[in-house]
Image 1 (cartoon, helix red, strand yellow):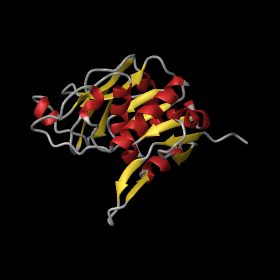
Image 2 (cartoon, rainbow, N blue to C red):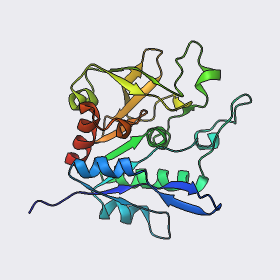
Image 3 (cartoon, helix red, strand yellow):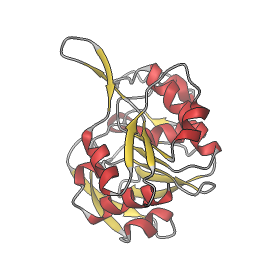
Image 4 (tube, rainbow, N blue to C red):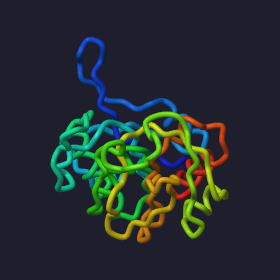
Length: 230
């Protein structure tokens, strides 16, 4: 019987209706992993080492979330932008677990916040608020737009198309690239929509949410390629 890859899913921090703290994962991530032949397991911060988790699991997926505090990439809070900050506990955990998986060259897929965290982990930074910092930018906070895939990227080989209509649910984006990362997709306004590592077998960060478009072949191919790499 073929072994099913075990995929670690980094936690989303949730505040319940009764104001209790909880961690979890959106079901669509889990469903896409399962449909692609893997088994997703939500991991949580704790006293154990990130290295232990990296040795235990075959791959890592980091889901979307809030905004990373700018101190993590050497900037200050913007004056005119309203940030919905992700808990520092999550940011610290995410950065540590990415480093551990990349150190072992194990597959990584980061979506939205997960993609931005990959960039920060490798020394890059973030455009903190597209509407106030980027003139003539598209509205990236809602709707859909066309995303162009760079033809020489690994992502192009995965999705097998030159352009995609992608959803857009973010006001931040990847700024300066981290070490050994390359742009593999952009919107027509120049905003980076996907990055990948040149030094790892599979380390991909996607700004849009392919899990929300699970019936589209390109979305399916992204998750299948990720699980297959595990």
